[in-house]
Image (cartoon, rainbow, N blue to C red; front, top):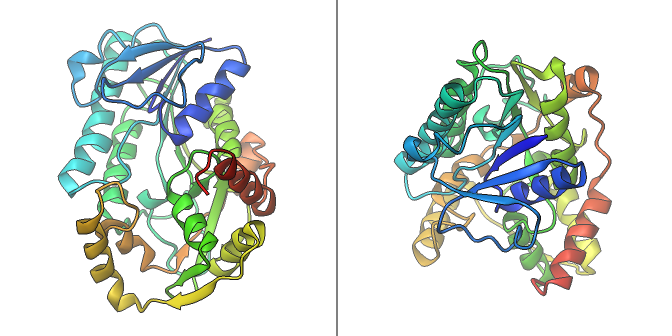
Length: 321
């Protein structure tokens, strides 16, 4: 199978590329001239230099593929315009190029986010039938990307995936919490609940969505099926690291101020930013992956105990910790 992956150089994209190669796919990676290729360097892939922000650069790039996995986008940005430029306009440019140059594609898979749906209004996990209510610029941009994709579901076969927080080797977001806990610091802003998914399970689920006829024209949540409190996540990481952290309580009213300071002192790629804080101020970020289990046979293999250990081992080996 000939397969194109956008965002291939990133955390999730590089893991997807590796698994596709193991399964015998001929993989092309759509990357920009400025992309850091360290995670796919040396792999048997073809590099296509293009930019989703420029439709003309995608016309030749989109042709001739059986499967297209669209993972490219921004998770952190300076403003809402940048989010929409990457996550909405970029998606629109790519899918229009596919429709024009590759209408026989077997599946176009868009990796969205739980942020597109927004937080659960209570302790009940979000389901695909619920009305999306994103609370961040990132979430709104990903939801618009979803809507663009689903508008074309009668023209080409498409699938949208909404994962929750994803962790594993190469991830830089969860790494911040590993690093703090390694130093014996645990940040707390009240009781919260989260769905999680280890990157290998997300990759398997993503490929399953691409290959299943039942996934055509559908939206799916993927998670490991367990709801974790922030205390349980902290305890799992601290146990793996062998630390007993001191809990620092942060009033929710101060979180935007702290995020603003952190954003000014750091870079726009910092997870502690004003847009992310809008999400963290909500206590429930959970989703129900029953639909994927019943319709696609998606069964996650990795729980938090194993996933956290393997992630920490990778951080140690690569001297991140």
